[in-house]
Length: 177
Image (tube, rainbow, N blue to C red; front, side, top):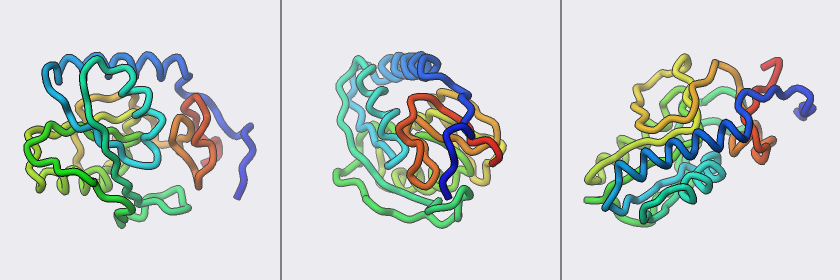
C-alpha cells in the first residue's frame, strides 16, 4: 500500500541527526583510542547512519556487514530472525562495535549480540540511532544512542516501511500508524 508523503511528520531533523552522530562519534573515538575496532553494520537500515558515523570517527576502523531481518513487508516484527548475510571475517579477539538503525523489540539485536558473543570478541558494544524501549521484548544494552523514540512507526535516514522512505534525510513518523 502506498502512502502519501503528507502522512509523514518530522521528529528529528537532519541537523539534530548530524549533531547526534557527531556526539556518538566523539564518544566512540574516545573509547576506542589506540584500538582498531571492527564496526559491524546491520543491513539494510543502518547503512546511511553507519556511513555518516564512520566518517565522523577519528580512529582507524575496519568495516563489516551482517543482514538480519524480522519484519518482511509488515509494520510489526515477526519475531523470527532471518540471516541474509553473515559476517565474512572472524571476530575472535577483536573489539566489535555493532551499528544498528533502531532497537525496537530487541529480538533481532539480542540474537545478533549473543551470536557475536559466541565468537569470543575482546569486547562487544552497540551503537543505535534510535531506541524504542516501550516495545522491548528482549533485553538489549545500548552503549551509544542517538535518540529515544515513542512507539510510532519511524522512517527516513535508512529506516523504511516496505522499502519506502529510506532515503529521507530526516527521521519521520508515519501518521495514522
